[in-house]
Each structure stands twice: as C-alpha cells, then as structure tokens.
Length: 297
Ligand code: NAP
Image (cartoon, rainbow, N blue to C red; front, side, top):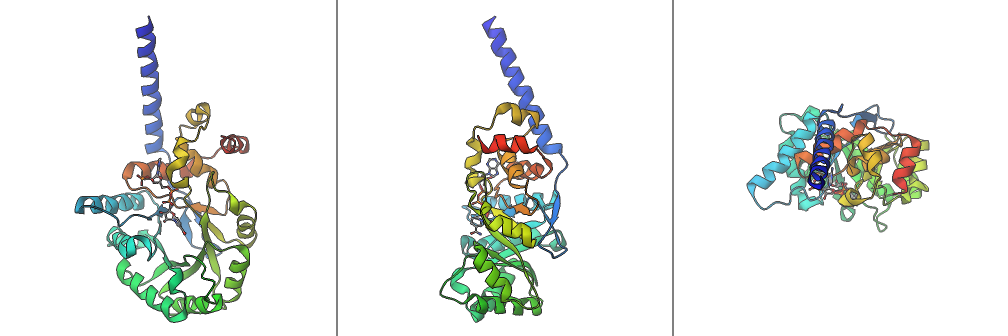
C-alpha cells in the first residue's frame, strides 16, 4: 500500500513537472514596451550578458552565441552588454549572435566609468562599435557615475555620438534621481531614455525614488540582476501559487519585477533552457494580492 502511494506521489510530481515544462515552452512569448519616450519598442525580457564572453572552449563560446540567437528567435530584441564585460569579449559574442540579423536586435552597451571624459567616451564608443560589428549602437549607457568627471562633459560626448549617427539613444545606469536630472539637463537635442539599476525581489531600494521618478518622467527602468543573481530560485514561494500559474520561482520573480509598467528586465541566462523559461515569464500576469504573497515569501 505504502509503495502504491509512493508510486502515485511520484507520478503526480512527474505529471506536474511535464505540465510546467509544456507551459514554459508553449506560452505566448515576448511582449514589448516603449523605451522611454522614444517610440522604440523593446522586449520586456531582455538578455543580460555579464560573464558571457568568459568560456573555456570553442564549444562553450558557441553555446553562448546559440543561446542569444534562440532569444532573438523568441522575439527578444533587447541585448545588454558592456565594454567592461569579459574585457570586451562579451560584445564580441553578441556580434556573432546578431551577425546577419542586425534588425532583430536592439543592442545596448555601456561606457565604463574610467572612460567618461569627452574624448574617452568617443574612443570607447568606436571600440564598442568595432567589437559589436555594427555601425550604430541602439542604446549607449553610462555604466556607473564617476564623480571626478563633470556629467555635462560626458553627456556632451554622448550627444555628439547621437548627432554623428553612431548612437541612437542615450541611457544611464546606477544613477540616482539627482544625477539623472543633471544628465538630462546637460543634453539639448536628445533626452535620457532609461536608467539601468538593480531591481529584484531581494533588492528593492529603487522603489523609494528612482522607480517613481522613472514612472513620472516616462524613463524606462531597466532592471538588472532581476533574479538576484539566481538566488530567487530558492525562495519559498508557495507551491500552490506556482502550480496555479504553471510557473517556476524564477518566472514568478520576473513577473513580479515586470508588474510595474515602466520596467523591463535583463536576466542573464547562459543556456537555452533558462532563456526560454525567462522569455515565457513575459506573459505571466498575477493579481496584486498574488504579487504581495510573493513579496512576503
Ligand atoms: P541575474 O540575471 O539576476 O541572475 C543570473 C543568474 O541566474 C545566473 O546564474 C543564471 O544561470 C541564473 N538563471 C537565469 N535564468 C534562470 C532560471 N530561469 N532559473 C534559475 N536560474 C536562472 O543576475 P546578473 O547576471 O547579475 O544580471 C543580469 C544582467 O544585468 C547582467 O548579465 C548584465 O547584463 C546586467 N547587469 C548590469 C549591471 C550594471 O551595473 N548596470 C550590474 C550587474 C548586472 P545560468 O547563467 O546558468 O542560466
């Protein structure tokens, strides 16, 4: 009898797992939101690439390229990289993924804080364009503020790059509200469209001022480390809630970040299975009370 009950229990778990996998693979895939006030649509789930470009073999590198291409196939257009990631090799992997399908991708990269003087911004941009194999960067972001360089100087270089057609939109990252305002005031013909900041169930500091400011001013908040570097997968989100929506803890965490209209998220996934799982979360909408349950987990 006990053996029968155990067998029944295993079958139950197996069938829940299969229905979860089916839901993950077949759910309508990606949604899009406007980037700032640009009129440009970016996928609500983007592809983060920190540590992409770190590999031990040609096969490992190819699997990183394949994962990014799979993301493009699913309709994910936003790819986030930086000159700093893997000392430029992340941008080179992105280049391989978007070759021959440039129009499917919205390429966001970042200039490092040590390159924020006027001429250094221009030179860093040239290097990124070359590594990415593109003639235009869709979104060029200041990676971190550098208090020893006046923001006006950095922004004048960013605007010059837009005027030259080398950059389409200007963004910032890790900026507080005050510095974002000063960055915007330093621009004349263009505006800042986004602020990329850490935002997840485990890191909610931006809710006090950065997020409300983005909502009021219609800047996009690009949420980095939205899975709290993978640690959300072990959060004790109630099983009945997950099974009701056929979702995994990671998907619940991404859906929670995306409950705010002004937010898009850029989880990093090295392989296709995590990537597909994350992409599917774009269409998973929960009620306010369910989001509160997740917050309390
Ligand atoms: P994250 O996206 O919160 O977490 C990535 C980790 O979660 C990886 O270990 C990944 O494993 C795992 N993961 C992905 N999908 C999963 C799933 N469905 N289930 C379980 N685990 C999953 O952390 P992050 O890489 O720090 O942040 C994402 C991106 O934000 C970066 O890649 C980068 O582009 C950007 N970022 C920007 C800044 C900035 O200063 N602007 C700072 C940090 C990060 P696998 O890789 O094995 O799939």
